[in-house]
Image (tube, rainbow, N blue to C red; front, side, top):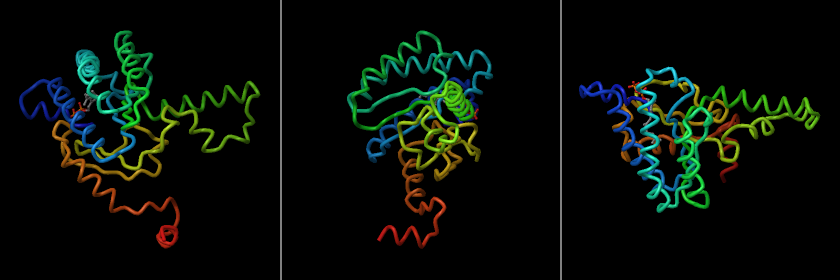
Length: 231
Ligand code: FPP
């Protein structure tokens, strides 16, 4: 969700105003995803590296997360959305952790859109954690090193219980992954748009879905193999 700061600057406003406007785009995107029958949506709200931003920006973002939870959870729950936060949640304030735990437990039984919010999250951090957990199980003799395969490794990642993303959307004009879900995005289609996050809306989401719909997923196979399997 990139481009909040530039959106604010272009309007002579403080960066925080861009993040506030970004919450509206989150709402529109979650609605669009639910309407389209998307099963899983993961939002990159705050990276491991974002801690290095000016202290006042970090603290206003954290306040915004608390406020968004206070305002939005009831509506998400009404719409059958299951909410979960992933990342180094122990780095967050006690108050925010509490709000997150409440939101997760309130929506845990919902069966609609599974909305994951990545906060204090980094793809490398996630991979290192998975490696550490496998290493300690191997050191304890609980697993055989030779048995470690893709599946065993992926089971230690934060988003192990949901399918890998089919589509990555990045707003704000940059064409990079910036330490998002490095493992899980291996076969994702990538959609980059110059639209700044606060201006991302249902129409933009539809453009990304249309791009995705035109893609043939080959996973290393030939196009002919894929077409034959589809018949
Ligand atoms: C990146 O844009 C955006 C962020 C670091 C914050 C994203 C947070 C929100 C959209 C707030 C709402 C989120 C939830 C889940 C309630 P940037 O600040 O790097 O923009 P710039 O590149 O234009 O400076």
